[in-house]
Image: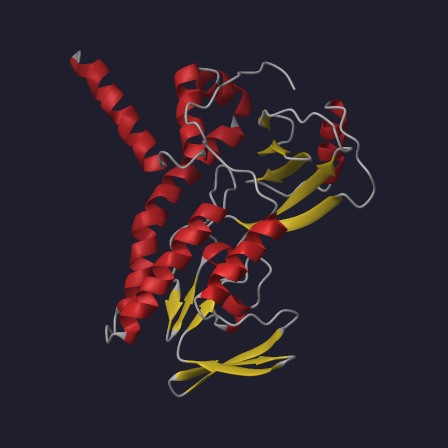
Amino acid sequence: MGDPINLTLKAPEPMWMVDRAVFDEFLIQQAQSQGAEFHPQTTVTGIQRQGNQWQVTTNNGNFTAPYLVAADGANGTTSRFLKFKEKKTRRSIALEIELPPGSEVDGKTYFDFGGVKNGYIWNFPKANGRSLGITTFRGNDPKDLATYLTAYAEKFGLPVQPGQVHEFVSCIWDGNQNLHTEGALVIGEAAGLVDPLIGEGIRPGVLSGVRAAAAIGAALGGDSQALAKYTQTIQQELGTDMALGQKLAGLFYQFPQIAYKAGLKRPAIAQVMSMLLCGEITYTGIFDIAMQRLKGSMFGQ
């Protein structure tokens, strides 16, 4: 809410804003078109390995399969049943605001640093309103996140009604770990694959799902090391990059005012960070650019 920097993203369609209910339904339909079965309102109550099969016990019957994928998010129980390492979670608050029909929606995306300690507030435009959220990435979870977010929305003149504020948890990436066991893989937020600097989880979630499918395909084809290779692939493609993001997050959120003025206030750096948000560059790519510039300044290139 002060000392802003304004950027125009260069890509013609740098990012898409989606309604998660619509987006998730689309994904379900795509899976069903490929032969997947969908069982809504089904709660997993137990998972056991029997021979070379997994048996999943639910309130709507039992299911068996040679391979199992834990893809049930931060609040899921599958990874616990499989005895994967417990993930560290962070509290987040979301606020979905629908504006009256005919209202003009500001097309800007806002990021507020410094409004909450050890985290930030985001404010995205939607077709009929705005989507706001707040999360922290280090230290103890503040108890008054909802108050922070409501006050922030009111500064924008946005109407906040009871029931619009929702709390959820995020599994922020916390270092490389084993993501496979006999006949099973864990992906997405259930695996803690959430960006440690900006909290973005959809892109790594989708990527890990694609890699898991490829690993199971290879295993079905006779590769006995396919699931172990999945862990290695995720560590190489995401883990190394997120490790750099974690270090950057530690510096940024510990000294946000200094980091903001020395970093994001510079248009070139802000543009690079916008490219990161849009998936056009990685933390590794940012590090490589920084090293190249450092070498250039040292050797007069």
